[in-house]
Image 1 (cartoon, rainbow, N blue to C red):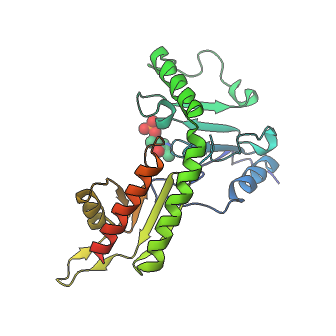
Image 2 (cartoon, rainbow, N blue to C red):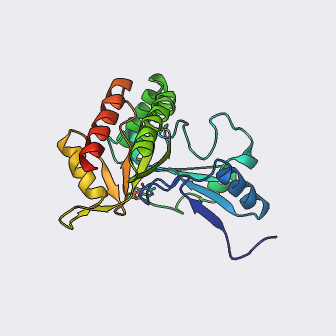
Image 3 (cartoon, protein in one colour):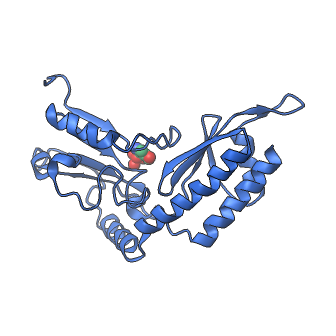
Length: 234
Ligand SMILES: *Cc1c(COP(=O)(O)O)cnc(C)c1O
């Protein structure tokens, strides 16, 4: 079954900005399989999920997966590719896909920037040398466990979701006694006053995507600040 009108399926393995929507663990493998069966390119936007963030080098495929039938046809990377140090982005693809581009097909003023390439290579070496993939996996589990306690304790903390060090809590926006709203924004202001910066999305979601070099001690301190702030918010 092939649809001649569909050439590609482009997806974030976890929707980042939308609120860290984390699909079931078989969603991406099944989407890849469905695309292969229909001759549709599967393209993973891993700008937020890629480079160790979710406890793997890429979120859409296990680090050791060599079977092309189980890998994305193309992957988009940026941001963390340079450790946030320098504007670098990249598209990775199988030869068969990449060779559609021939010299002159695609131009970019700063494409192939040598400084950018060097920074990206160094950032990747640091991810590997400092074991940041395993760090994200381990500390991410601890974070969700700590947040899970708050979910059990406070009705307005509805849930925690995410993978590795890309996580979010969802709150039930409340109304203060004087009628003013208590949304994710107000909770983020409390977090700030208590020493932790985090970003709300969509009024009821707070994203937590700390630097991958965060230590266990720093992570636990962050969890304590969140707990204290939630208590003040209650
Ligand atoms: C930042 C971002 C983009 C856009 O990247 P630019 O380099 O700013 O064009 C695309 N997708 C996701 C998921 C992003 O986080």
